[in-house]
Image (cartoon, rainbow, N blue to C red):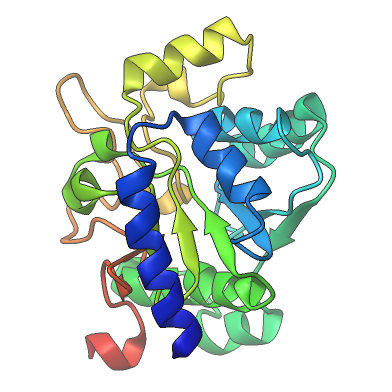
Length: 247
């Protein structure tokens, strides 16, 4: 509890002090200040992920990158993860998956996403990530305010449910800025991005978006669901997704 309170005070101070920093400066502070402990970057290797990964590669290619393979991702995402990792020279990408035992017990037919998408996200994303993050004090994400919903009020620094520091260097970046950066730096685009997938998650729960729709409109379309549950605001999960919390 003491460590968590210290982090909360530190995060509040940083958000006041560093509100005018750019994304690279926020990431440099996170990795080099000596006050964030053990740091990992969590990446989906989705539509816009290469921007934050490229910024990371300009500072430290050995930083642990946690890639959550739900085993329901598009084949294009798996290929893209390998391409980006090689292109940027990332040397410490760790693939995180649910255990075979957990999948056989909770989703033996791979259809849980049809009947209980929150439980599916918990099984395949939230629990594996929380286990992987147990060895870290801080984790960095690619969340942005332009994704709307809960994300419009994001700040650079936050706290997760375990008292760890969360860092969001790209909160001010919009779609045009992200696309321009990818082109300027000659970074590879996710193969599905130009086909109308503006936010890319698991194949069964991701669809194309049309002009004028929010970037994340294609995620869990037709469902009263905006988040997978791995992210937090003020220490609380954006959507309760454990079975005991949603029953």
